[in-house]
Image (cartoon, rainbow, N blue to C red):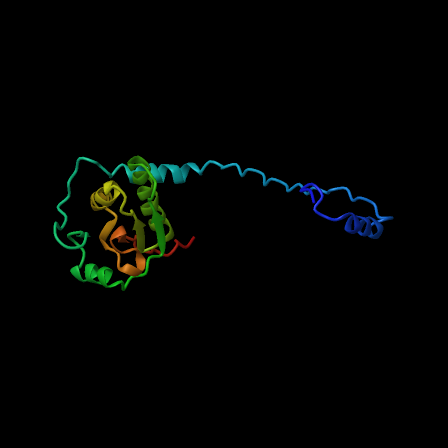
Length: 183
């Protein structure tokens, strides 16, 4: 038997007899439609200005006095120390998450500014900022930037359920709620 025709002459004849009268089908090809690219609409000017305004607080030269031993933590002078303990224990559940993985320092500053502005606008009290491990650049800089912002009340290394030492839980200052003025 040759490799080109592994069937015997008898088997080939039987096959030809069985398929006699059939027609060869044309191969149908299914073309999947490519999803149209979603054009990114520019963010409203108000959101862009909030992001820019909030990110101007972050300086790379400023070195705040942060705890050198133990987990990363910060407490603004006018905030009760018990808030820091609640953050450490995981009593606060983050209402919003920010992932800084893969961002440059400039992008990370802008995103932090936007996060703080969004928290104030949406009245969110607790946020989680995931800076990751990587080359330790964002891991070192993120607490320094957050400590400079006047709307950050406190932050602490996140409990394991929220990212452990690759994330921070941040408490954001909220404006006093005032009822709308009656006309």
